Image 1 (cartoon, helix red, strand yellow):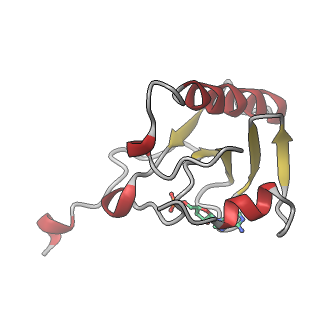
Image 2 (cartoon, rainbow, N blue to C red):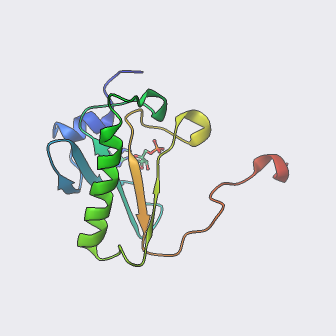
Length: 122
Ligand code: AMP
């Protein structure tokens, strides 16, 4: 899955986004469909489709995504209260955009576990 995604269009400014942070390697912007009072995404500028495509060669960028998440959390004043970082992988993980991204969710206490056990409900 190496097709261009909506996130490449955001990086290239072909579509707009509410950008919170940018450097040579990463971009952070507000999620268009927020799932918490604060919800933004941190993405690498060089696309990696899924967690399954992370290798020893490109793994450093994943650490950098967390550095950016913590930087924006500090800037926005919720670092001490806390926040949740999530990266979904493929269908069962709930991934819809195939360009890895760290969801950063904050602004209220988060529930745990974060999933619904559909098998038990049926
Ligand atoms: P995931 O389901 O983990 O792949 O997350 C994809 C996220 O991208 C979702 O939370 C979407 O709301 C978000 N999203 C999709 N398109 C845009 C966009 N144009 N601007 C900001 N966020 C977006």
